[in-house]
Amino acid sequence: MGALTPARGVKEPQQERSRATRLKLLEAAVACLAERGWTGSTVAVVAERAGVSRGAAQHHFRTREDLFTAAVEHVAEKRQGALKALAHDLPPAGSIARTWMIVEEVVGLYTGPLFRAALHLWVAASDEEQLRDRVTALEARVGREAHRTTVALLAADESVPGVRETVQGLLDMARGLGLANLLTDDSARRDRVVAQWAKNIDAVLSAPPSYPPS
Amino acid sequence: MGALTPARGVKEPQQERSRATRLKLLEAAVACLAERGWTGSTVAVVAERAGVSRGAAQHHFRTREDLFTAAVEHVAEKRQGALKALAHDLPPAGSIARTWMIVEEVVGLYTGPLFRAALHLWVAASDEEQLRDRVTALEARVGREAHRTTVALLAADESVPGVRETVQGLLDMARGLGLANLLTDDSARRDRVVAQWAKNIDAVLSAPPSYPPS
Image (tube, rainbow over all chains, first blue to last red; front, side):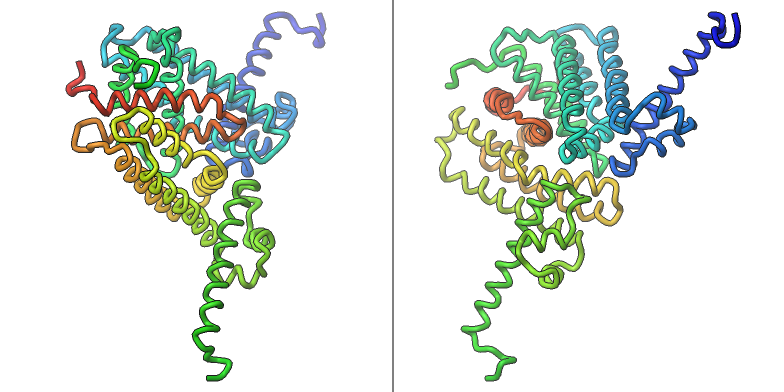
């Protein structure tokens, strides 16, 4: 076996290094997007921040759009994995403390650097044709997944009228709280809203307001 | 009386023309921001769109920041005036139809071109020091006013624990629905969420979940 066909023991560390480089680029891309916005975020800036050569960055991601949509997707998946893992650490079903923890974690999906990065990507996509379709598809995937996980954690029965829309509204509220946190630290107000809406969601899910409207 | 001191009959049409020019600039600025984003929005572009000379535009607004913050504020005030005026056209207090109409109108504050314009301004402000303070202050004013109007329309008693946070969460949800509408037409889903959350808000406000948590 010559240098062109490396033995397994040599090949694996190479694959691992390649994966590690890709991860460094993805994390650097999200941080860059959150701090500098879309106009300030180029492949070159991200490569430098990740300590990776520009050629290596372009080997992993052919275009700027590839890099930044992959980055937001990667971090969103990681964050949602953490939300799912929460299932093992929750207080017993039926307690308000459980609902409160779930609402807090769901809202946590939409605050912090990931949301800031995603927001920059959304706003850029609303103006740029070549980004729009990809970001729309990404947004739909991430949104569906967040909905599914929240329904499972809350043990919400979507066959009951109104339950699905109640959970959707909760996710919209979480997104709105993320927006409110963009310019100022909104955490004190947010904590109070989360605490109250955990109670509201709990009450609504245990006795959904009936159809037809009174 | 010479040409330098025009009689009243001449002066008033001049003031009116000046006010009309200002209004044209404000409306054009919001439309421009909604369509082209912050980077594509300059005083020159807005002046052209409004059919006003660049000199006249600069007479009314000294800086780009002046023009765009004034524009978002002006349109937000107009929109909130419409929300307040709704009070006269509402179904009787205590009906779910009334709550539904209020929730729909509140959500309407955050969908459409005004929200799109405001969102571009927010995101730009999160990256630009000279915009940040002004937009933060504007956002706080507009948010307080929306809260006050919503509380009044719902006849919500904020001395009852949890009522204030319930209304705040509704406004956060409305903001999140605005964001969901940025890339795609979300109106069908939104209508269902609004219909259900009107019921949820109605149920919670008529019997707020009690403290302390169970």
